[in-house]
Image 1 (cartoon, rainbow, N blue to C red):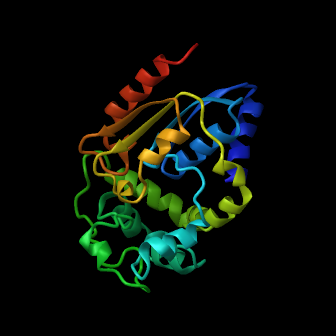
Image 2: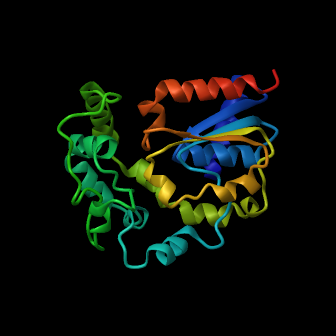
Length: 243
């Protein structure tokens, strides 16, 4: 996270911009919140989607997840062993992409197929591969993502999860930092992340949170699923900011 935030600041420097408004989704949301928390002089407003700002956990995240889920299967714990999830997801990349984007979310801790998993099971085990895609996702989209991931593999993305404890140790200042800039939070009504990422703690950490908008009918991929509503919310928020 320290490196990703430094990259964002470095991008502003490279472009010759003093400040920017940062917007992110899921892990991008975590990066956006952290940019705003650590560099208020460079990021004058922030929008997070799906993942709220939760500050610093009271203990390293893997320890926290183990307490929360015990013997239950949880995708972030499954992702921790290098090579295991890579082997599973890269065995059939088009199937993996199709399932992750349009199938039963493997991160939905309330779904019966996920609840039925046990330690040793894979991310895709028990999940249906959808034959037809939702209207917001095309076969060309899936083919493009699969082509890119066939070249890069999944390790880069999975390594983000493997650095959560490192982030906890390297960024103790997040325990006391608040985000004073104007902020907006957007989340899909059916986003599975809502089951284990509570929003209420964010209110004290982001005192100038303009709004918490729940997009009706949307799932996790809210900016793709409800592009018009998300864009309208972003534009409305931006118009409230000083020029």
